Image 1 (cartoon, rainbow, N blue to C red):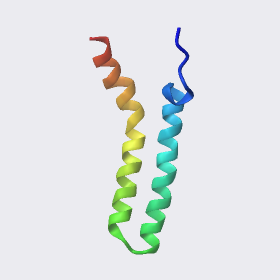
Image 2: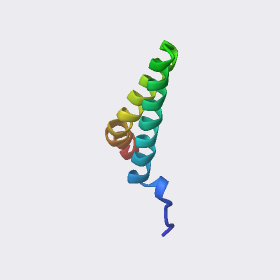
Image 3: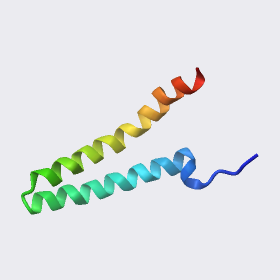
Length: 67
């Protein structure tokens, strides 16, 4: 059996999603400080994508994987 690296496991991928959320938070704060709507929007999209990763992987990907 081949051993997986940490970032190839579910906890590892969730750690990456958490790091993306933290980077997006910094991006949104920078956008607010500079009054730049584009930075805020990019940060929001990054946050939404990272938060939706777990349900999408857990439900949709598992459904297609079993077929």
